[in-house]
Image (cartoon, rainbow, N blue to C red; front, side):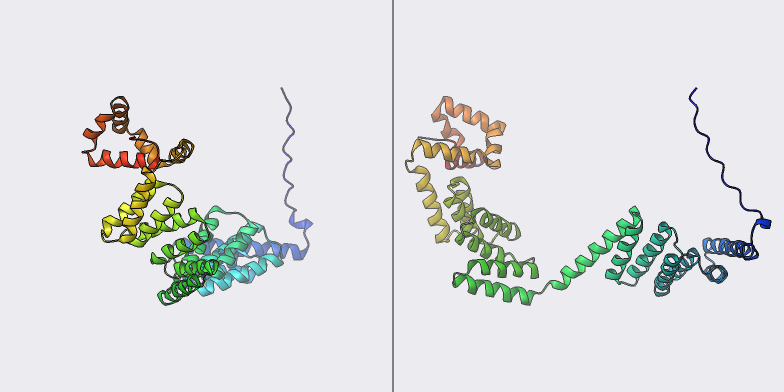
Length: 353
């Protein structure tokens, strides 16, 4: 059998006759201080907080170089809702601990307890610093959780304090003026600031899309239009702007959808009607086979087109139309199928010629 090394026996405590008078006195003091601490613990558990304070205070007076008595005192003050005193006592405990080279875990505990008290005092920045100090000494999951919660709350308050409808309006107007001057990059900054000041206003997204359009940042412009429409589905300008962007990108099925969306909201919109006419003209105009193929390939990457082609009903419809082109007429009476066929034609995926 394999022989394992024996665990070394712990060194025996020195006998009193081996200690100096000073060491004997210190041992007795420690014993008395720890006895007072145990009485304090019992009183704390029984929620007899005044008694606990008396016992922990006695322990600290007997052995002022031991930080745990102060940390325990801080816990009692916390339970009594005297958060300021709790935080101050934790600060004192850390000072004692550092001076006497206390274990890092005890230091971390006192720092975290101070952070808890400061949160109760609504001093979040100071609390976060205390949690940070604690985590530098020792990583504790609960302290990390509290630190993140304090940071999240502080950010939420900062964001809320930043909100201002008045400043948002000023920034939006500033953006409009810069746009008219052709300073599109500067206008983007102004519209972005307006969004931060009033995140509920949809108009700056449409306006910023116009700036991106001027800078030929087409995809960013589309993203802003989509955001604007998501915030306010009845905002016609965003629909027509979106239609124009997709038209430029030769995504005619998307352009058609956007212009139809605008017309559904406002059938008197000349911009939407003219845009739709341009789309229909481009779809019906003769294009080279190479261009048609390239447009169809781009459309096949569109999740909406993919979904239509993968739909069971539409697959049957397309199969019938391929076998008998005249069968298309019977399907066009169904609004949903008709709409899908129109999208496929507009995308260049399906030809009715």
